[in-house]
Amino acid sequence: MSLGRLYTADSGVCALATTTPSALLWAWPGAATVTLDIAAIRIGILASGGTPSYPSNGSVQIQLCRVTGTITGGASVTPNPMNSSDIAANSVWKSASTAITVQPTLGVVLWQQEIPFTAGANWAEYVTPGMEWRVPASGTAGTGIALMTTQSSAGTNTAFTAELVFAE
Image (cartoon, rainbow, N blue to C red; front, side, top):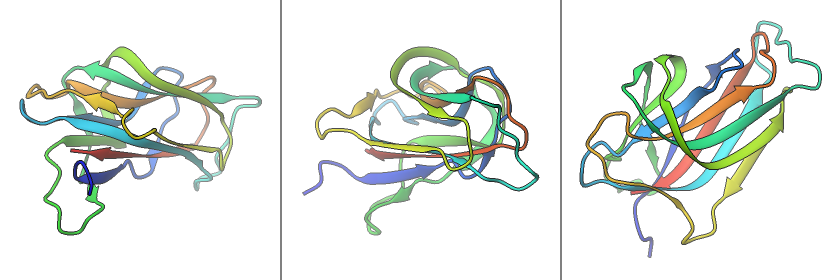
């Protein structure tokens, strides 16, 4: 039996071309009584339209960070439950598939991975059960976690996608 309800939050296609840390997915519990536990991370760099250009010998650092801040912009994400009879997720999610105009204030880095900045590069990591990253309960919008990218050099017409699997 599952210890919680499992969901997948998908960023969709996010066009990012900057060397400053930028959120792909930003989430917070949504209420003072809700927690969530991150169980898996998936990240990919797409071969998108518009003739993408990747920097020579470039890389992208991906970080899962505790964050604070008031989110401005971003697209609302509706997490998909893994069990069709589960209730809707209580947590609140935003994606950079629509520009996030105010980035979060970064706190503790919980996880990070560097991947090549090229079409088709990807990374997936599943967390050992019992070792999930906990996002503590908070009714304060923006106080939660964000999956961030930092590019060594900005690409042109490059796109990213990310998924986080979590339990509530």
